[in-house]
Amino acid sequence: MTGTRIAISLTSIEHLTGGDVGGVLEFARKADAAGVDQLTVSEHVAMGREVIGYPYGAYPSTVDADWYEPIAMLSAVAAVTQRTRLSSSILIAPLRPAVLLAKQLATVDHLSNGRLEIGIGTGWQKAEYDGCGVPFEGRTVLLDEQVRAMQALWSNAPARFAGRRIAFEGLYSLPYPRQSGGVPVWFGIAPGPTNIARMAELGAGWIPWFGLPSGNGGGHTHREQALEQIADGRAHIHAALEALGRDPRQFGIRVMPEPAMGTHGYDLAATIAAAHDYVAAGATHLEFAPGLFCRDLSELDEALAAILTLQGGGS
Image 1 (spheres, one colour):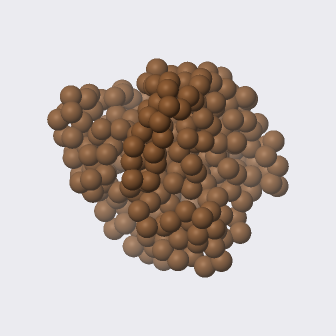
Image 2 (cartoon, one colour):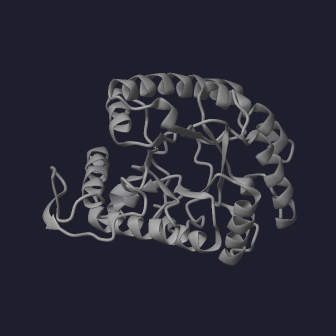
């Protein structure tokens, strides 16, 4: 991958459109026409009443916030865009049966003419798992088996897979994704040794996440720690890729630069000014959520144009 690529999160745009999803799709259309490299959607299937277990400090939203289901949302985005890649940031994959998820993703890949790159992870709230009837413990093992099972379904008919949590034999799940080899999978997981090996073997990219600033100070230290973790994770992932004979230049790292705090909320200009540090640390894709920086719809076009000034630059 050469040059910095720009990902734009559609999450929170609905706050600027009065909850009108049509306005979100119109912005997606504009972003596609402007040359954005990726459009992303975040998720929670459901939220418990208490924010328990969030690992990145103060939870930056509320439990009653709007969250569109990413697969359905990306289907709609696919219909109104032509060239930009589509992704999630992140889809909590273990909340969904692997065989169904494989079919859903293959379908969206066809609807988008082969533009889907799914970002997956395990989430953090136990109440969400309890509500979906999925065990919270062992969710990372389940995530690993899901990817392997989906890749089997995307490449063989009939397909078979035998894991601890997922097992099937003689299944036909057609059509395969439009992209040869299946839908590229990006992992939103911590870069420990087991996860690094998992990403090197199965992944097309890594989506590190460090949370959003709470406005209570310590932002500089938090940002410096994030940059160090990106650089360290990149070095270990690249070494693991090379050990498997994979080209690290084909592996993406998508990072959302920490929004800088201004007098009246998040400061987009200051955030853009500091974004090059993330590229220097190893990010191939910079992800921005314009909805965090804009007070109304009239500011979106200008914000998008400012973010795109970062596109294509190197470290």
